[in-house]
Length: 219
Image 1 (cartoon, rainbow, N blue to C red):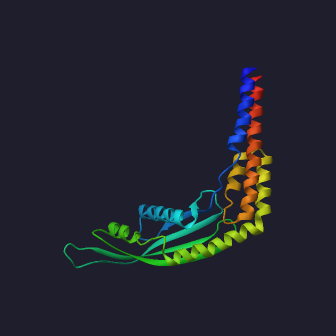
Image 2: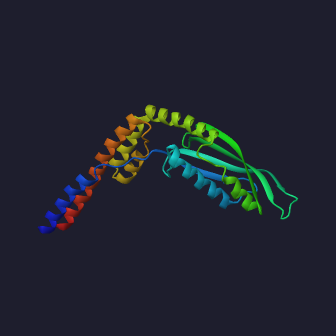
Image 3: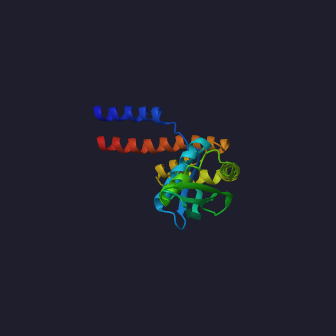
């Protein structure tokens, strides 16, 4: 009886403490494709750069997001300088496309050149990556255009987002439902608020099922 009472108290406490969930901001899945002459290590560093920029520009790398940022780094010019010691000087082009990864709609794109110099080709590439900055005008404008389309998507499809979450919860897939709802960004305030309320409901259903299961085992 003490065990059952303890579990009942824990269930009530769990609702009070964990009913509110933090929602993700504008989330994108970031993919960086290394072009010819560019290593996967350099591509990974570009991805890290884009993730860092996201913390300043209102988007985050989110693995379950329907929105994608596709980037490719192409080596377009390289030379070895006639100096002592010889240096590698190169120019690379970074192309970025932002869009809906499910229906294939492109929201915005941009490309810009980066220059680097180093004692080796790899070091020259690392030098060039320093040019990927949060205040890059082309990237900033592309993000702003994409953000408008993301807002428009949730304004037009919020009901569908909620219906999918309801269907997942109805199948007992509570974590998937919460994850789906958590993808609604705060830049779409109406749908964000609806998703926030729905997350609380789904979480309570999840906790109630778990509590009832534990109580049944304790009897």
